[in-house]
Image 1: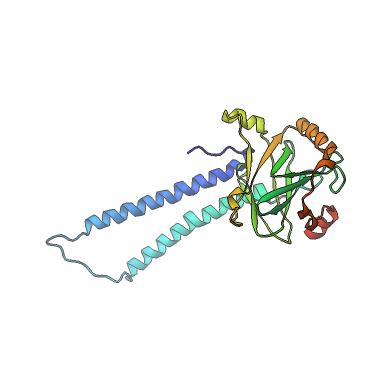
Image 2 (image 1 turned 60 degrees about the horizontal axis):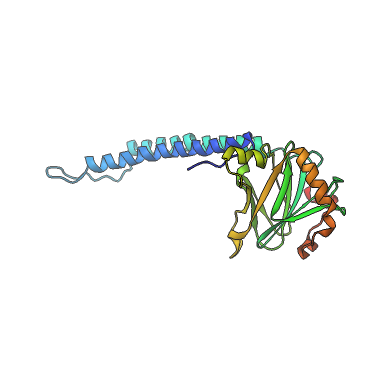
Length: 260
């Protein structure tokens, strides 16, 4: 099965952790399975052999159980926790500031993603703000900071190509960020698929229409994004604002207050 492409090289560390966990646990499974089969064959019932009954609490058995438990704990659990923590610190421990990022507000509802971005003036909450439903457009060259809230139930904002996702909660603003280094055009060229789009999905069961809660993300170069932003800002007045936005504040001061 072909692995999904990544939106930047940094997130390949997450792929490495999955590979490491699969190989490590798969190897242990193979050893345990081989021992089970071997013991089943060696100690099977056959003429001339008498069964040996034991409760398994002899000092040797206890020592062996403790040794194996420590081996699994330090060899598997601790090592996976270490690499997972290291990847988390590398990718998600240092959120970008709003000044250095492309800021996107997401308002989730059954079963759609509503997006809001600053227009050409670079300020949220002004007349040229860009709104869209199930389609997100971002540039390369700087991180994307996604601020999210839900109207109704628990959702999960998931872009598989970032290898990350974030729960979206009613009445609470959560955040997610990533660095897009690969434009949609570059991804299409790499895959040889002219129709490819970065997919956005809901990763939390949120109702009967959960599987339809999908969107797409287009990644552009900074120059292409500036041109797109100018065009969308000019047409901002033509957007039919959904009624759901009554519960969503676009005042940056509110976000600063919530984040304290």
